[in-house]
Image (cartoon, rainbow, N blue to C red; front, side, top):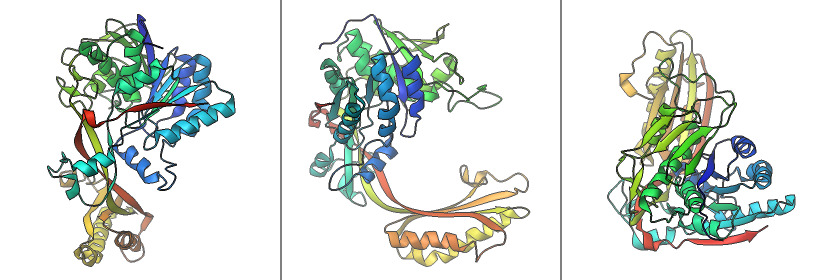
Length: 451
């Protein structure tokens, strides 16, 4: 099956992050009249968590935790409507994700063709080549802890290959967010992946859709300056992309939220750093001349261009970074701030010896609602009646983390009066760092798991 030559393609976002609601994708599949739903489930944090969940023997348990829900609720509707699903929800184990989806489809009597994309795992390459870490300027080998895994951001190439071979469900690992959209746009409109201006235009559409609810009113309201009337029934965004590279971004009818030029402007500038040189695995996109125009259908998008794609790909290396110890206690009523500050002083004194032992990499206390976000500059106005003390420390081993967390817990019985709302936790920490890998070092592959 080769690329098509359609005049337009209609596609939508089904997920923008690892905790997004699959129910919104189901609504889109049922009512959106789209040919593709693209689901992003990965960020640095979620990829690291997937590596943490991976069984060291079987490799299982390391794909997106929502895939069972996806196969139960979204997949049947997608099959009925003839919608292709494209997702990076394979996370740390795309092959296991593909097997699971194929098996569930078979059990439900659904006819699908599941493609698995691998090749983003560059752990061996990182160990062998010891690349320079962007954040430190030093080699990976000089980072604390051991390498858990490393993954490169890969592009539309393999997705396009899977589409050309008739895939109806495509599951990959660290597929770049906009690439999920670039591939089906190029496939349906007959665009070559080295037609840089067109791929730049596709990337602009992908960038607008990839963060889902950000375009339809999420992370936007700031009353009274920016008002979203209702969040009761939200919609994911969708787009109709035309052969000339223009597009109209919209949302489902009869939904709340907000989609207008301003919400699109906010998302267009999100995380791109340099609008002239937005680097993705597919293109060096240029958004400087993008225009956004309100229309009856939604927001018209035009003007994005592109140049040749980068020769290197961004990669993330996950490192074993010890354990995070956390304890929290609440104070309420008159004098809450003074009692919280006293508790902060007491617990710091208790932990002096533990910190001096050298196994606490960092420690921090915050008074939530007072200084946790803006620091000392955010002095309270008036006397607060509720203050929450949070203690957190990154420790090199679990035993030290336990000592820190227990000190925070102990404050509720051996500290100031009227304390409540206590909780404590200890969890492993994965540090994420950035390096770059030559494109030719990535050996992408596509294989099918028949249902």
